[in-house]
Amino acid sequence: VRPIIRNPRAPRVAGAAGSGLVGGGRVDGVDGHVCGEVRVAARYDVAPARVGQGLSLSVLIARGQPEDRESLRRCLATALAAHADYTREFRVLREDGNVRWLLLRARCYLQQDDKPLRSSGAAIDVSASQLAEAPVRQLNARLAPLVQERTSALRLRHAPLRPLLHPRHPPPLSPSPP
View (cartoon, rainbow, N blue to C red):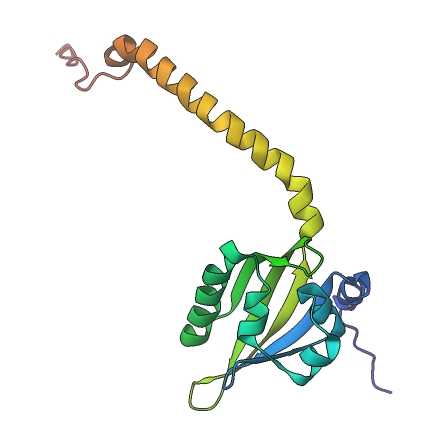
């Protein structure tokens, strides 16, 4: 009787897939076409049949928020050229005008001649996290100039004390008795 070996991550993987927030896909390293699951199609607001048959990577990049497209294009091109894994967070503009945040993580697989064969990974919807973090980012943006202003004021106020607290040349030690 052979023992059953269980993957300790299996419940987490199944839970992530069942949440509807994670979808898998791959990018062909030769022709740049993307194939993926129904959930990937939903993330990019594309018909599932189109993703199943393979879409041009440029079609999916075009679904990105205009401000994010060029950096996403550079990230993917650099990863393929360097045969590197990649992680990228970006926004997708949906047909209904809503914006979704995706975290894209993928690994690059090579052919025998060290050319990219494919990238395989997951697109994770992180919109809820981005929404929850937005007030913190706004508060930090408001506080940063205030902290800088206060720090500058304290430096000016304590400037006369600096030589006393941090002398450049400590006083000479008195000679020790013979």
